[in-house]
Every structure is written in C-alpha cells, then in structure tokens.
Length: 315
Ligand code: KPL
Image (cartoon, rainbow, N blue to C red; front, side, top):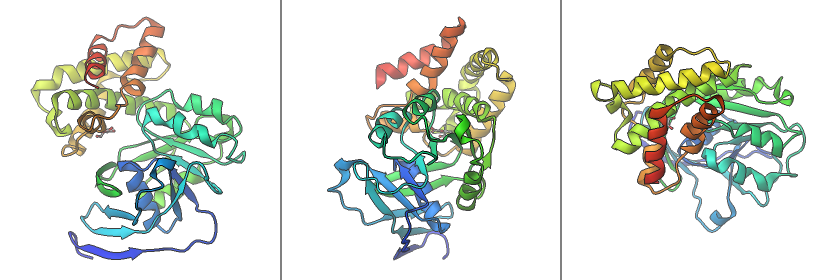
C-alpha cells in the first residue's frame, strides 16, 4: 500500500497455541514492538494492568516508518490472569519494571525467559532476585516510537536492538535475538550486554535531561549551545565507566551521542514527553544510577548531578 494511506481492515490472526511473545507494558515502544512482531507473523499478546479491563480495545492503530497506517488485532491479557507465558518481553518504564513484574512472581515456569527493555540500569539485578529460576535478559534499542492516543502508535525511527544475558540461566537464549530480528529488521545477541547498556546510559544521560529541561527536540542539541554540556556529560560518564571496568573514551561516547542526536533529530525524548505529560521520569534509573556508581567510587560528576537535581525539581 502506498505511504500515507490508511488500511481500515482489522488484521486478525488466530493462534490456538499460547502466544510466542507476551509484552508487559504497552507504551510507545511497547506498542510499536507489539505491532512489528504481529506483522512478522509472531503471535503476540499485551499484558495490561487490571485497571485497564474496562477500557475499549479495538486493536492497535499502527503507523509504519513509511507512513502506512493499519489496524492490528492484538490479543490482550491482564496481569492478575496472565495465562500461559512462553516468553516475556518487559517494556514498561524503568521505574515500573519491578512493580509490574511482582504480581507474576510464582506464575512463570522456571526457564521462561524474561527480556527487559527499558532505559537506565540497575533494574535487571532486582529482577534476578525476584525470579531466581528464570533466564533474565537485558536489552537496549535505538528504535524510535511515538504514542499519540489510546493504542495509537507510530514507528518513528529504525534502530538497532541488542540482547544479552544478565544471569547464568540466560546463556543459550541467543535465538530470541534471531526471532526479534525477523520483526525489527535487525537484532543481535551480545554476551557483553553490560557494555552496550553503559553506552546507552551515556546517550540517555546526555540527551534526556537536556531536552526535557529546555523543551527541545533531540536534534536541537546539535550546534554550539550545548556542545560543552554534552562533552562534560560524556567525560563524567566515561570516568565512571572506566572504574566500573568498561573501556570507554569520552570522544567515543560523544560520537555515539551526536549520532543519536542526528538520527532522532525530529523526536522528543522520552523524558521530555514524561515531563510534559506530568509522568514520573526515568531519571533515577538513568542519571541516578550514574550518580550512585560515581558516589561508590568517589568520583565527582557535577554536570550530571546538576541535571539530576533540576529534573527532580521539575517532576
Ligand atoms: O532513548 C531515548 C529516549 O528518548 O528515551 C533516545 C535515544 C534519547 C531517543 O529519544
């Protein structure tokens, strides 16, 4: 179908077996991933909180990167009656991961993989404590997504997605990346996922607080006005990464940040959107995590500290 056209025929698929993917959290990125998985033929269900039981669910209104809008029938379930889960993809905000997963303690058979996809760090370790018998997998993505209404999602940027093991039980689950790749175009498995998490943390420390505080699109961080701040943020993150055993140069981090600024120039960061909508931001899991690590090692991170404080005051 040519771009910009709307296809109003509800796409349905009947799967007698439990869905391959159960998604917990259906915000902008969760909605886009659910849509892409469904379109790739992988049966997908979104698990919602029980307070959404009364809300209408006509399906997902999904607009692709090419501007093609269609209605997708996606099964929904509720956390109190999760049904059979084969693999769980958790796409809530960082601060919601543990509260959203807690009702599922005792409901997931040992061996069912839990894939975590959120900004920030420090959450996966808590999930391992909650689910000691399940493979826990961390992931990072640079796909862009927007939500413009109830179950209305737009894919705004094609990016990379990487998965890797958090605990021993998760080794050997690389095939999950292959399955996601068929939906996302690319997805890889990396045993050193921690390094990629740190690199993504640097990007989020740089882009999210600045765009949220100054009410800017990501692309507006390019140019001289924010050059010093971005550089300083990367110097501080690189300092902490080094003592955490992660090889990192501030030039490399800054190069990655500027690449994302350019690639997502037209997007509003998630922290900008959260502040605008009066929602709790992910500042604790992003800059808060960096500050906690810096404090443990006695490293000064004044620029990140200032941004953290400023976001906390606003939210
Ligand atoms: O992850 C993001 C976010 O907004 O949370 C970036 C990479 C900054 C893209 O907007």
